Image (tube, rainbow, N blue to C red; front, side):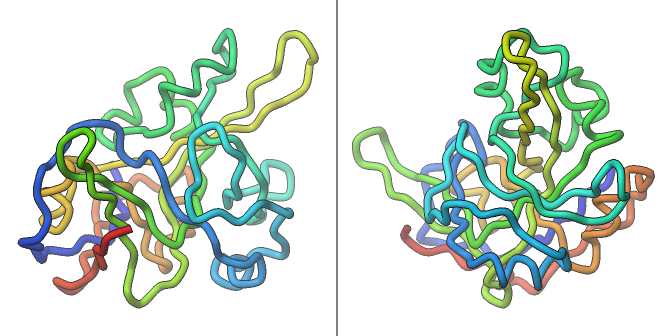
Length: 223
């Protein structure tokens, strides 16, 4: 299973209170369309509402290979993957994240992994620590990349009442690295820029695409 992940190894002593809940449940995409176009080498980005706090069920840009032109494109999709066979959109509430370890085995994700991968542009993602009512929000970013790509999967679901297609996506997660382990046991798969093409190529299943970065590879600060 490919894990195109940028991994930091520094343990931040200020982080504590690891949780095992949903990850990633919020992210920041406040970047302008021109920067997204340049970074992901796509001709255009649909108009979207930039947000420092993207939440499940909201629409945001994804980068994928167009099924007809077989070229990289930007499009908007709803966060929360809904497989073609799902009865309704509520299914997506359970599928905002897809574990890299089970992409080929879980029915909700295996078809998308084999045929419909995407990149999810982000400026940062968020995690929380501490007990309920006294939680601290942490913003996680890459010091040397203002915008980066998270591994994702996308699907097209047809509304049985209107006949209209709805495109949705999930963010792929993996085991947390040493920097984030004190906060959470999972983290999004961060794709290295020189591996964007590999992740989008659904025929690519190499195991040697794990890309570590220097020990200060992630910036973690109060959000």
